[in-house]
Length: 324
Image 1: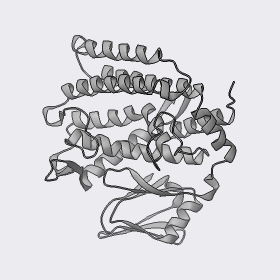
Image 2: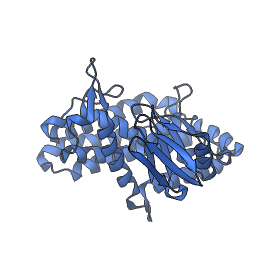
Image 3: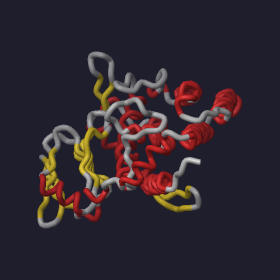
Image 4: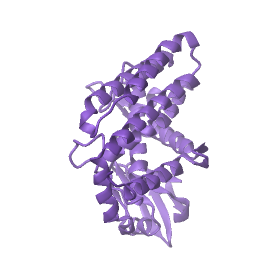
């Protein structure tokens, strides 16, 4: 299970080799082998003994902000990156192989976007213009060539952005009236749908970063995203493969009209922020979806485990890389 501490005043402690959650309504006891990760929001606390027990059991401990994105984490020293992987990772980043890698990532993302649109109950004649544009953008991206990322960066960002604009415009046109939105708004969100997306992506960031660290990869050495100082930019690259999982969850919550105005607060500047009820619904929905076993590449695993497997394969790619 994913343990989420997001209620003000909640305290996680260790008691007789078990985790105990203390809150205003009492306490709850959970054994370490039942927990995959612990997420701590502002206003919640974790004792040092509980933190050390989490490290001992290789349980990720993440400290997250109001958008659900990790701002800090604890992990075992056993996750220390192998220096050979880090050297090879840097060599890969500066090579032509990185160009091919990121092109495949973005094409995979557009394929995912097209698949989600096709899964919606949209009339074919209404959907076809968007599908044609996505196909055209994917073709243009596939034709990009360069020896280093900087040679294709501007074009790749342009086509990727254009594809995402069409994708989200199509989703917005399909949603119930109360969930419609005008384009992506990141931080802060200016509507309920984007607020849910942003928080969901934050959860996904944490899962990907943890998988990279455990695989011995440096998440701060990016390939396509390389300009953000002191941020896990490789996570920003890899998340493009998996964003559609969060999109799917949020779209279905909107269609089912599960999220109500009680799930949000709206600030004076018009920004939307997820409140406790909204977080509880979204986090549970995301975790249920990530725990679902699916077949990817011939392997029957949970979606969360597929991320771990991908990180391990990427570490192997870096280790075996040699400039030709």
